[in-house]
Length: 435
Ligand code: SAJ
Image 1 (tube, rainbow, N blue to C red):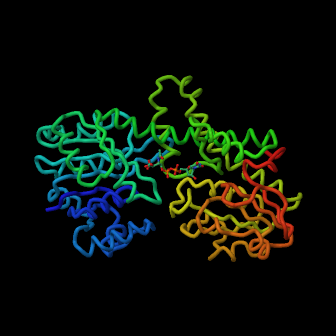
Image 2 (image 1 turned 90 degrees about the vertical axis):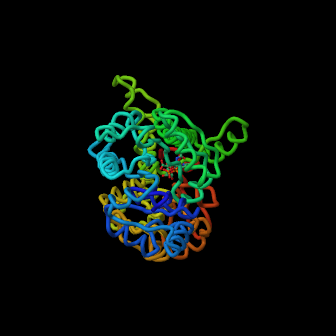
Image 3 (image 1 turned 30 degrees about the vertical axis):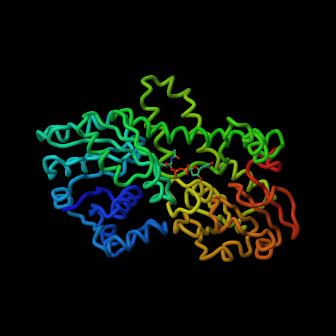
């Protein structure tokens, strides 16, 4: 018998399964992909976070964690089920078919008295309109013959296990008996505080959190554009503005990537009933700003070249969607790389975590990427890049060398440096007249 069954072993399901197994709770993970299941059973994972890898290795060996493709067997033999399948945007709509299928499978096998927790991000109302009816159609009643709760994940990829174990948790439930069971379960794994509410509020809270972050980042990006127009350094402006006790501006960058902030704001926006409100929403404009930041990077790159750039080598440093992760979904690097290839540049990409190159030539290391390049573009603030010295870069680059720092990773401001190297920084003074 398992304490927990986690359905969906993706970027959320794996840390979830690891967290329960690390607390000594016998955990079974289910996925339809045999390669994911096999990898986990061999003590490994596609998530390259060291504590995830270590925990999987240890808990698989101790037989606290196992994976299977057999959902019936796993569900029938578990006291509680957590569903953490993807809810992606496909053809411009939120696709709930994976959640639907997982709920059907769980409802078809679940034993009386099982706790079922939805962890996937969903549009408000999904648990009451889609999930609960799937169970009720089989005569399984929430709060009586099964217990339903919505507990959204809040983990930041890159540090997912620690965040799962330590972050505060929201638990949404509509039946007191279901809430009691869910609180009991999360108390075993969460150091953070548990906050309770009804299910539709919990569903909305999750979307509001991610939308807030997207809007805050858009503001930082807008500050960067405005400062470039004034001819001043946005990084200095933000640093000084943040000395105010009630101001906390985030960092400008080449855009917002990843599977969450690029999608969740649209799930929230859908709740406006009229087009006008949706079209004029701060949420929509934030998305537009963040989605268009890659053009600012391209403008900086173009400004560094004289007219002829066909065949010139450019090194794109970072293809992941953010620092220290291997995930390239909706990475701003994709748009930049594809545009540069179309324009005739010879584009090379290097990322210490991520295999994806978006059609650029793959460099095995930093040296191969920058060797003979006219331009290096820092697209992701990976730690490996933060120690780079300009002198080291200049030595390996071509005669004509300039660097675009799209993430503020370099310890220098923009301007001309020794070795004839020019640094153009997104949000920097030198972007004046360019952006
Ligand atoms: N970014 C900036 N400037 C910043 C911070 C981030 O441009 O100052 C960019 C990043 O480079 C990246 C994107 O934003 O491209 C998103 O990165 P992130 O670290 O802000 O967020 P995610 O998508 O990795 O994780 C978010 C988190 N949500 C919040 O912080 C409110 C995480 O807690 C959620 O669990 C996750 O979404 C999710 O799965 O929903």
